[in-house]
Length: 465
Ligand code: ZN
Image (tube, rainbow, N blue to C red; front, top):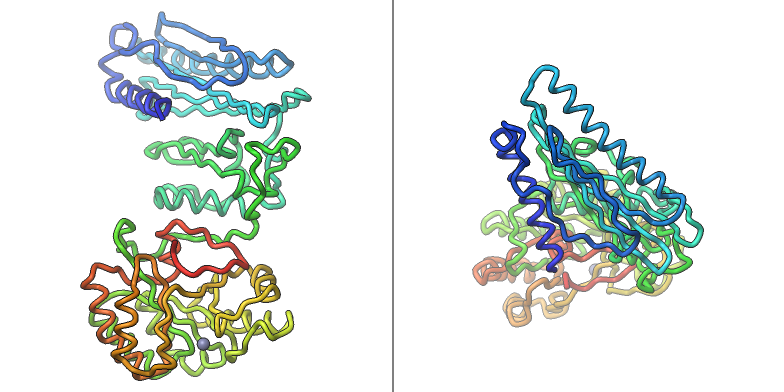
């Protein structure tokens, strides 16, 4: 924690230098806070330094000496980086005798699993010819047993590239959707600078190369648990982490389109099975009046006849997922039958909403190994519930209302059925009362997103917690 604070101070110093560079450099005096201080983590290698405090280029480039053939490569990189900065300032000085610059680069090194060394060189080059500091990032990963310098594809399994990139993209969007848009299409160049560290594989995407100059450099650490088999350096698994869940089964979870939810406040997901029906419209009317969104788990064979209802619900921000094709108990079906029940329903929904459901609600909540394995194949999670008011059985609006209000909790998933007038009548009271109690009514996908719950294909979930 303390180290992080010191790093943050360094960043602030750099920002300060940038903001005031024109003043600081006007008479070739050293910049303020020169040389820059940095509390480095050095677990591998001795520290060497390129240092120049005479101007017009002030340079502080630290790099490790590791005692094998890689030293030549690392030192050559440091020298090149220094020389490029010198050339740049020299070129500027042809037109401007006051031109100047400062380059500050530090490194951290980690020894992971007693065998793999990760080295992260990071810094900025500020010069009077550029409005923004130029970010400099370079990583080296070394197998200390063989002395091999590892490429990104030696560390990560590129056969699982899409899953890895999805994970990175999801993290970026969670932090800064604008940065995610600026990165454009996912591609392997995102993994140009990766470094093994104790928490996982860190991915560094620097502004200038990946992002416009007005963004911050992104650093995303993919935990070893999330990487699973996508992490190839398995001989000495770092921290004894198990490959669970495998990256390929993680269902991408993008931020909800409507950003009107406060994740620090309570939220619940009302879900309605067995529709759509006339009662669905009544529930939508209540939502229209009071606000909030719910999730409909629809019967696939009814979807086509109820397109308008589904369109209206989806247009209001509600989520539409499947509840099997014709309400069969999936645990009693063959693999092929289960697959058809789920995928036919998903296809029918996607045809109308344009969104492929990422999870489904099994009829009767019935799940066995076959159901789990098919949904894993289909890339779908299984969502059950944490509150069941038995509305299909009691058919009494007051009882359904009382049962929900007595049991409601933050991040609950509440089961009901938009097939019964009594349920719709209960919702006419439940929905405004939940809102009055401070609950935000969200879809299940929103609930999972804001609860930081990663959906894994084939797994069963009962609430946002
Ligand atoms: Zn049902």
